[in-house]
Length: 102
Image (cartoon, rainbow, N blue to C red; front, top):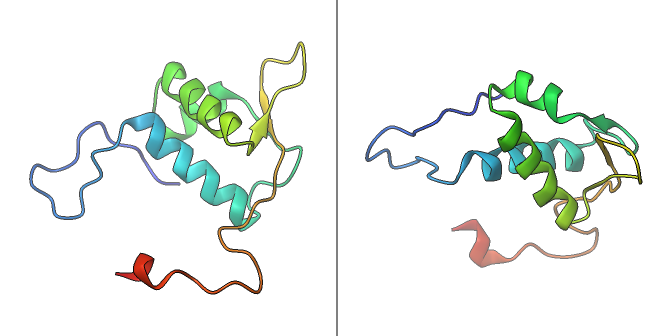
């Protein structure tokens, strides 16, 4: 799995200066969109924190971001989140935006 480091290399041209929780949310989103994480798959923050070497606070913030975008959700009384959507990055029958390929 991808590790999430605290600080990218200074002046790295491909460095990602996004906060850790945003980077973790992107990784989880990619896993959901690829089908690696299926609908109803449990995503406990403690498991994510251990798997990616981040704090519980970072894991919860990533899950909250994904919940705000409806990739994951929580049922009343449950502590862990579950995958709610099997979204795909692009819809069938649509052309990719040529500006996004630059």
